[in-house]
Length: 295
Image (cartoon, rainbow, N blue to C red; front, side, top):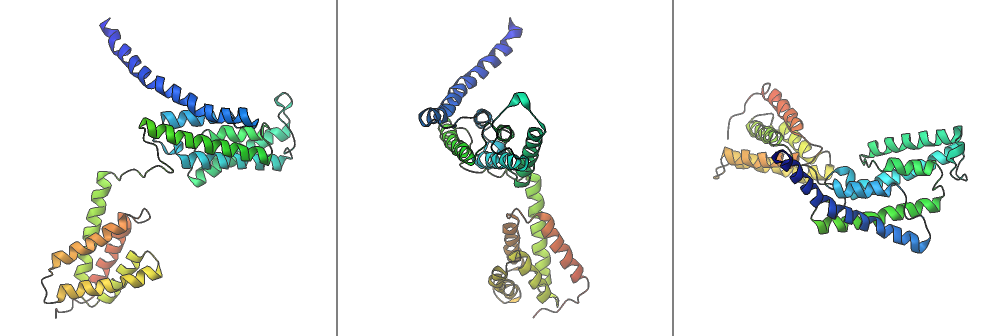
C-alpha cells in the first residue's frame, strides 16, 4: 500500500489541475459555440479545440500567445485559400469520398505554405495546421467564411486572455515576454562593455582619438544619422573631463562609457560580440598610433 501512495498523491495533484482546466476549456469553447448557434455562422471549427487546450495547458509558451494564435490562424487560412485558388477548387465543397489530384495538390500546397509562413514569421501555432487543411479540404472555402473563421479566433483569444488572467496563469496580452539572458551571457556582456570603455578611454589621450570617437558614435548610433548627430558631443565632453583639471578621474569616465555600452547591448540586435569587435578594432589602432602627451 505504501508503494501506491506516491502514485495516488500524483493522481490527486493532476486531478486538482485537471478539474478547473476542463471547466475553463468548456467555457472558452462555449462562447464561440453560442455565437455560432445564434448567428447560424461557422463560428466553431475543429482547430479551435487545440488552440484552447494549448493556451490553457501551456500558457507560457510562445506558440500559445495571442500573437501566435492570431497570426498562425491568419497564415493558415490564407495559405489554405491560396491552395484552393491554385487548384481551382474555390467553388467546390468537401467530398472526402472522391478525393482527386486537385484536392491532393490543395492540401499539399496549403500545409507547405502554412509551415513556411509560420517559420518565416516566427509565429508557430500548431493548431493552424488543422485550420489550413479544413480550408484546403473545402469545409470552409469562401472569403466570407474565412472572415468568420478569423472573427471566431479573435473572440476565442479574448476569452482565453480573460480566463488565463483570472486563473493567475502566465499569459501575455500579445507576445510572450523575452526570456531573461542567462547569467553567463550577462557576465560576458558586462565584461565586453567594461573592456570597450577602458580601451576607448585609453584612446582619448592619443592622436587616434578623432577616429576612435567617430567609431564610438557610429556604434552607439546604430547607423541612425540623427542619433549619431545627437551623440557626437559625448566623446568630446568625456575627453575634456578626463584631461581637464576637474575632479573627474579616469575610473569615473570608464564607468560612464561602460554604462553607454551596456545600454547598447540591451538592443537585441547588438550583442557582446559586436562590442568586442569594436574593442579589437580600437586595440589594433592603438598599436599603430603614437601616444600623445597629456595637456
